[in-house]
Length: 72
Image (tube, rainbow, N blue to C red):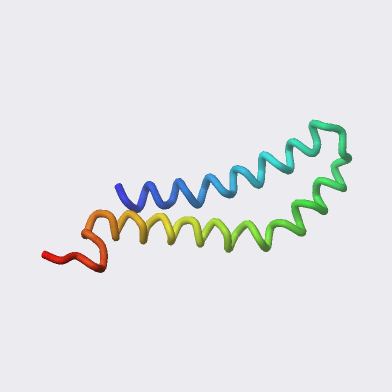
């Protein structure tokens, strides 16, 4: 379940990227402009989605295991 939640966090960042590109088209920008924006943003979106996935997985792991400063 933790892995699924973390994958959903990464996937959601990619979906936001896709929504932005389609929104540009809907408000009247041309397809070549939307393609250029997508091409320039894609190298940022992929690493960002990986970071979101890993951070969410780490956060879920720390919350479940009791954290690093557990004084048991």
